[in-house]
Length: 459
Image (cartoon, rainbow, N blue to C red; front, side):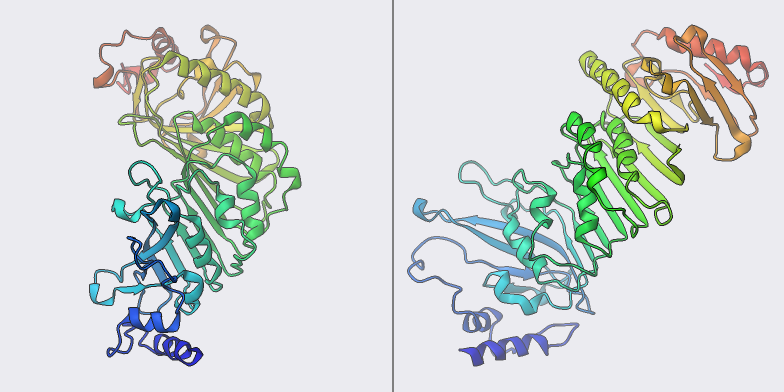
């Protein structure tokens, strides 16, 4: 039996790296069954279930990439044998002739994962590839045991992308915080959509897990508990290591309220980063449900991060619910007191804005951000605005008072300022004009008479 095992392994290893064709006289299934006699447990042949199939997809010519994977959990129909079987299906690009099916667990197929440099686990639209719950229809949950076993064999892995991260309510630590997973050469990690990304230390310990990591991307993770995020941000950074290796950190979150926490989130993490090595942090917030939203680009420079630029691009959902807006305002004020007190200045470039809660819509270059009128913290009294570009010659300043009646606009240079618009979107044309819009417009006309005369200021 040991001789057969070695023969099967040699047949796999010595096959062409481009085609990976095994001995044509034997099927792959029979070869692996001989090599791994534990495939079919004794006494279960009469149980109606599908045998485990591990299929490797997108095995590139260099035999270094694994992608387009889907993890499957099959449920035994016999109630006394409710056992989830794992299936990994990987298709070799569009060439179905290179389809490989493995009838055994991943731990018994270590040689199939050796040499893999790039691994991508992507979402599959096929519901049959998803986990089947004990009750109800198939879900989008994937079983962690297969992924963990697979990663434990990829000791030469350089990049890992987990596109679908619905792990039965588990957090990222359930996937990666495994003693047997050791990826010393991993330089690029991409995770998401990730609906349970709510603990700030998850990012910090990732860099401890993977010492060579240079780029981390977290996509569409909902910060499900803002209060936890705020509290832990002041607890865990002190315990985290000084991060000296990453050169890029990209965070992507989902939820119209999330830009508050992303701002706070990035600030908290950046306190533990080495500014000598980390030059760019990007936090992007998107919304699947929103047809119209806000696109804002924030550049933040903090006193503790002299040379660090933080880019945050926002796309918010329409906030038509009064209670949501109220909670939004409260969280924003709380955030300002705890987080933005450390900021030296806040620079905003805003391309498009839709705020149905206050009736303001702006196209092109918007002068004031969404819900700015709700900010009461003294830390928000001064903003440095960028009109139409990032050149120093285009900077302007807005000094906020206690209310809009005392708002003063001091424009330094307007070389690239082309237009400022206040209006309403087609979907919100029945909304009554907001007096805030009138105040802003009147103030701008008062301090920008030349723009108004040149028809650069539109109503």
